[in-house]
Length: 387
Image (tube, rainbow, N blue to C red; front, side, top):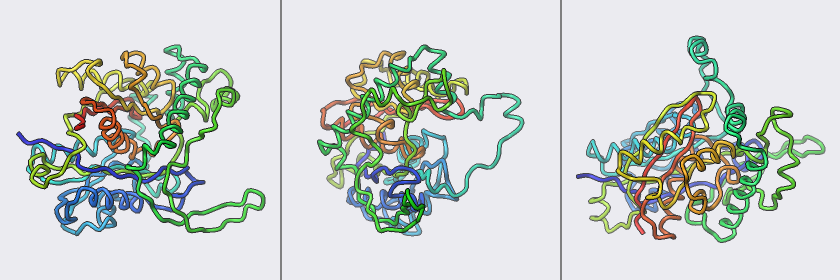
């Protein structure tokens, strides 16, 4: 039986949207840098990569193909772009894995990217028929997060306490160098705006670390933030994921091929599942996707030793964690998107690489990556970690 293993991972640092180091860098340029380094770390020749599957939400054209060429892969390597909103990076890895398991491919890249600064296209308008059938389909995600908080009694205080946890865990992990094996420095041009005069300038810049987190965050500061949607609401700039830019990639290889090359994989892709839910509470999607995934593999919540469940908003990830009964001590252990940032199409690829590296440090076996999805869905991926 064929198996797909992950032999390498690489990503950029995450930069603040509009104000950070990638505010003039395209999706394809960011992703090309991540793919190039991931392929080098996999110790395979560029021409041996058969396909690049890229997750991207704010896409302009086929980012997967463009990034493959920018990464130095030859014209014989193909590329495709998929969009399942915030699960796009994880979906891309699942597609690449299935290409290896089911269709005979030996080496493929699964990856993800998004630039909120430099979207360049996308959209396509809103269907009036879907609006008639499901009036909440196009509801902004921040509104769905407020609904989840109110509907399921997730208090503002609980959300702020969790958000502080994310910032502190991420800061501690960053200080301990836990992200250094993931991040590849990327040279770029950045637009700077002088706050006083409004004068713009273009400067050389290197994104070499995650830049979105606020390690000096306090609970008092979080509590002082006004809800974005006004009094009586819950979501603030402090308890939601940050708008950010970044890219991540993993190289997948057929297990026997990796063995033949003497490689030590980070882990094995075991499967993934998706599930739908009401559009107006899209944030609780993992509550339906995770049980479906685990049931298909004969596992229970307690069999999973490490979790990465995307922090789109504190309200929804707290509801998912508590409803599923996940142990907080093995959940988003180095912080999540509230601190790190959330380039929509990138996050699933980033969290996959991270959970495998962190799982290896902890010498565990079973890990799950999950997230909610705009429009009312959830996704979850199961990985076996090779310690």
